[in-house]
Image (tube, rainbow, N blue to C red; front, top):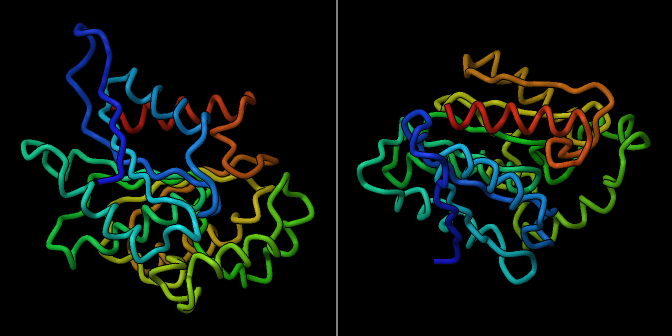
Length: 240
């Protein structure tokens, strides 16, 4: 099974070990996991969290057809003595969209929801069809809607990229575990996070969105003051 594990390596004197976490890394579905992702994994391990990292593979080598079963199987294979109520599903960007979509797949696999779903700049709509995206795009740091749409089309591999399995914002969040999202206002993903927040509120799904004014895509992974502050909070939330 293509996955990597980071075992907790905290002092024995700290509080009881935290529940485990699965962490799916971003990269627009075209790039492998990077040093910034491993830095977050290491920070979680330092706080006593066992982190499972599904290596779902970039397009075109793999598509969503392999990614969802992998994420589900990694979740299923967490130690038997660990209840789902102790587990966090986490991810950033494309990996965050995969984590959210994967959570929706759990009931069909006979698996319960985790304790929480923690997302950084989740790519929620492969089509980026929200008109508000165009207003944010000129202020983003490196992502362009045009490039992302082509990457999303490749990931869909002939399927409809607007399908809720590929674009979770188009599906219902009802029945999901509580969701937390970290997002910046200069992120092209921001308008779709607002859409998700509105739908979750309408359907009674707990969803907390932390918005950082002026921050760029996946800012908790960046070496900036706002990024370090957000990363510290994410680690604290998952490890407590």
